[in-house]
Image (tube, rainbow, N blue to C red; front, side, top):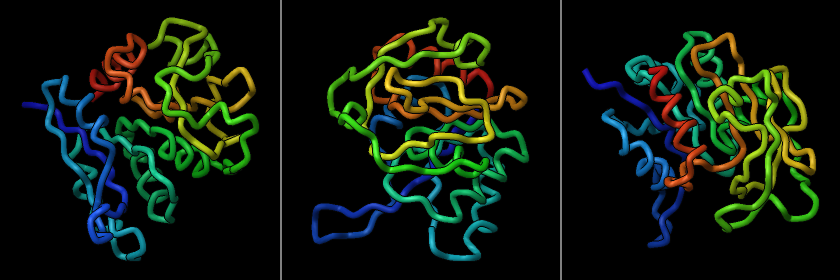
Amino acid sequence: MKKTVGIILRENTSDYKDIPLYACRRDVVQFLKKYDINIIGIPVVYEAEEEFEKIKEMLELCDGIISPGGSKIYDIDYKIIEYLYEIDKPTLGICLGMQIIGKKFNGKVRTEIEGGKHCSEEEYVHNIIIKKDSLLYKIIKEEKIKVNSRHLRQIPTTNLDCVAYSEDNVLEAIEDKNKKFFMGIQWHPESLMEDIYSNRLFDYFIKQL
């Protein structure tokens, strides 16, 4: 039976008549289509108090969850991450998804990042340094790699293992090695489909399903 990856859909607005949408970036789906898996979107009514109970069953039906990038964090985001952690569901947080994970585990979100090195549409923007005792290093197999970057906020600290930093000391990856796969990354590997390290990361995530 095929495994299933769920993608948390974030609220968005179309360019046509400001129609409200549930969405994620197309490249997240495009990258996952490389694999022989089912892909489903999980729409979330972010400001409804009863919403979490409605989507729990969808989370449980998935073999793994991706919390993708976005622009705003809601209280229900923390409930989702807490639940995925409790049931040990393989979870990958990307950009805002990492910030949600980090903040849930006693982290703080800080908006100021000096120098403008972390918000660019260029394919590769800066290096990150990966700790050798981390799961991320086991996956990537390199201590230093170059990544893309398009974020304005950062998580300076969290109770999870902080396992990668940019050369200007912005936290780039967090994880809990005691789980099957519970990781947040600040860059966007889904936008680097031919990148060997992006493929290693997604390959490993899919194998944990």
